[in-house]
Image (cartoon, rainbow, N blue to C red):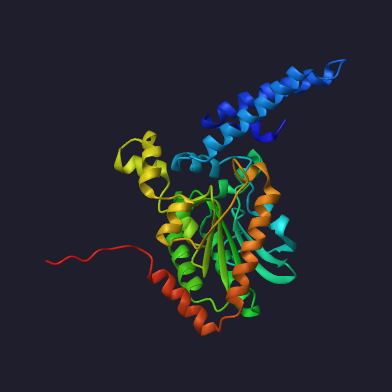
Length: 328
């Protein structure tokens, strides 16, 4: 059975029921001492058509909250999964040279299609022990300072920077605040704005608040179609505006955090397609789309003089936001 079946989302339950019926019918056909009857084959074909129709109906009309749920799916590919699929010889570098090593934010050198690059990524961890070790993908100040160190190292050696965003937000604990997480993120925003090498970020899952932006000020911002990128989580927004975290679906719609909405607003530059139902159904297919997009944008950026690169990056972020002027 597909591992994803153990993590069925509420809106996917009709599909799991059809999967169970299909599995039972196929098992009966395998165990039968005689070849399947025409009626049995017709029933199987009918069920398969019903499943395909249900998939198109469900996944073709996802709400913002449903996409948030897919972005958080526990079987969804994480940063290191993509790095392993599209890069070679990833060499992880550790520590911020001030406090320690944050395993929620990883980085190091790798080869992408034969060219050396610097990878900086947020990683949640798959099983419980690893999730705890990686603080559920919520970086602390030392993580952002490690990223800052790697950005400067990339600039020194002329390496393009690829960042992978996947975090509900920076860690908000007392110890994180005591070590100045806001300052660490702010320093990264400043550093990334002036990096003299091409930079691309990819939202592969959750893109939550300043924790995501801390590695997201890049020349190009890509996002998978079932990922989200937002100033605050839907639950946090609901708790503030409606005083009830249960209003998260309403908040998700209001925040315009889905890939399609973000592309319309100019926050992201390209939406990457996913397999039907999400990247966890076929990580290799999702990785192939990512590889193609990264190479395309790297080819565009590598041809730009440094001054042009910096000017274009500045203009990109100056254009964000919409306002209307009216007469007094």
